[in-house]
Image (cartoon, rainbow, N blue to C red):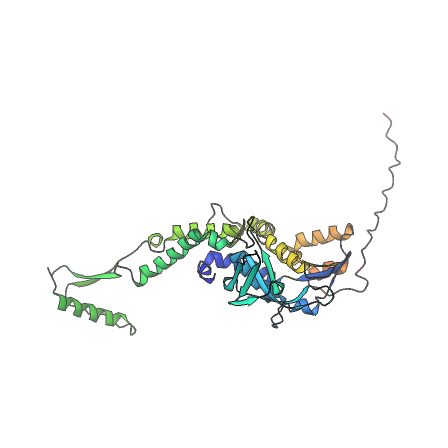
Length: 355
C-alpha cells in the first residue's frame, strides 16, 4: 500500500482528503436540535490510543482510498446497545480472511485468528458476490506503476545512466592511451569534488558538458500524464485543484469554483462515508456531521452578503454566523432575528396636470 504513495499524485490526493477530515470541525446533533453538542468522550478518542478522532479519521481515509476496505478490532462495546465504543484500525495488508467448509468467514489480524464478533469492517467499491471491497490501487496498478517506474528511471538516468555528464577532449591529440586517460580523468574529477578548486589542464585540453533537454531527461510528459490519471482514480476535480495538467488552465477567477468542485465531487463522497460509519456507532437520535461550511472560505464581501441573507430569511442565528467567523457569541444571539418591516412608502397624492 505504501509503495503507491511514492507517486506524488497519489500521495497528494490521499493526503488532501485525510487532512481535510482530520482538521475539519465536527458536530454531534440530537434529533431535531440543530445546536451542536460536544463529542462523547469515547468518540473523541475512538481507538483509545490518545491521538484523538482526527488521527482515526486519517487512518480511515488512508485505508479506504488505497485499499477499498477499513478493518478494525473492537476492543469494547456499549453494554446497553452493543455498539462498538473502541475500535483500533488494522493495516489492510495485514488482514486475511478465509472460509471453512460451511461457508463461515474466518478473520486473521496480523496473523492472529480473531472472532468475527470483534471485527469492524467497512468496504468501498463493492463487487457483487464478494465481501471484500475493490482496491483502487490494485485495480489501477498499471497506471500507478508506470508513474513510479518513470520516476525510478529518471533517478537512475542521473545517478547511473550510461550518458556521461561531459567530455574531456583535445583537438591537437589524435589518441590517448588508457593510462593517460585515467590519470587525466582522476585529476579533473578531484578538482571538481569538494574543494571547488580550479582545474588545471595541459595545452589543448577542454571540457564540454553534455546538455540534456529537460523534457527528455525528466520525462515530463509521462509524469504529467500519469499524475493526472492517478488523480482521476480517486475522483473528479482532484487533478484540477492539485494543478496537474488536464488540458485546461486554473486562473484566479475560477480557483474558488474549483475548490467548491473538489469539495462537492471529490472529497465530499469520502466525508459522507466517514459520517455514515460514525453514525452507525451513535445511539439514536444522535447524528454526526462534518462542518463543511468552515472549509469553504469565500471572499469577505460574498460571505457577509450570504450571512445577511441567512439572517433576513431566519435561516441562522447571529451566534451561528459569529461562530463561522471565529467570533465569540453574543448574549441573546441564539435566537433568530425577525426582520424589521420596511416603512410603507406614502402614496403619491398629487394630481396629474390638466392638459
